[in-house]
Length: 374
Ligand SMILES: *Cc1c(COP(=O)(O)O)cnc(C)c1O
Image 1 (cartoon, rainbow, N blue to C red):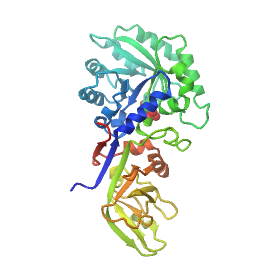
Image 2 (image 1 turned 180 degrees about the vertical axis):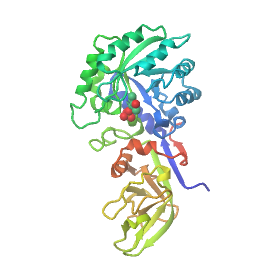
Image 3 (image 1 turned 30 degrees about the vertical axis):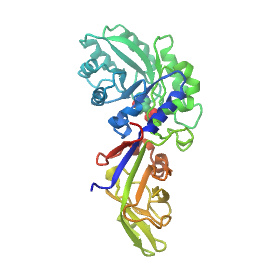
Image 4 (image 1 turned 90 degrees about the vertical axis):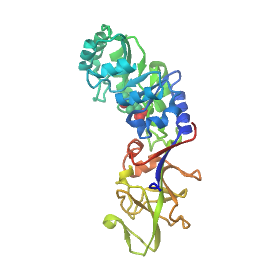
């Protein structure tokens, strides 16, 4: 019998979340962002559910090739563009659109020999200060690209640094910088990630609604948790991480559990040992001390982690689930068989991180089973 752990990918939830993305910015075409192996879900596992998108956006040319192998003939966008001049051959061969965020990428294009010109997304640095041309240099880059025979179209793009912030004016400075940089330049625009689409979609529909780039919302996690939950945004969980109880222990009052003895039983209690640890992607920093334990569902009943997360195991309090035994199912996040939901955002928050990190960390040793659609 294989180790009793698996990640379920809920295809119907992916499709429903894609519909939320579509509704968020009226009239916009939707890139389904599937970088990082579809945020840990597996590109091959989400493809069927997300192929109603207008295109797929990712970073890795090898993942783009996988999408072509799966049969996708529509647009694919490389969000970080080419990493070297040879990637332009891949773009030509696979018909990929690519981001241009740096002068060197224009040099490579100018030297690229191809039969067919390429579509590029020209990235403006509107305050994130990672990738993109400064607003003052943006127009010059656009003119340079526009003059190249290797280029057949330029979409104007930026990525917002603060779309998920509490302040409703959080994107104003970035938007103003982008609008100044792109004033009077023709072409479609692409601005919104999940947070911007959900929070500002109505406002941005007119100015920037050509292409939106949702990632995290497709995977049923709220980009601005805890201000808003996935439920608040109408998003359904797309990944359920489940593992079985492989041992039950009874702790005497005063006994402790796990490395470092970080939890001590206040009275006699049963605990379940679950076949999931940090080597599976469950965060080691999730709390399990006496004062606070990260939430977990055991046979669909809410309980908490006790003791330290180790490489292959976690230990959970069975007090609320007296009938639990070896073979009982822990849902570390997602949906339990009885329909109870434990939001990945809540688990992430307990561990001091975000849902993005947990889903992306799903380890290769955790097999995925697609359920629902397909
Ligand atoms: C990852 C990424 C996105 C998607 O971001 P989410 O917060 O997951 O919606 C959009 N645009 C760019 C440029 C990205 O790198």
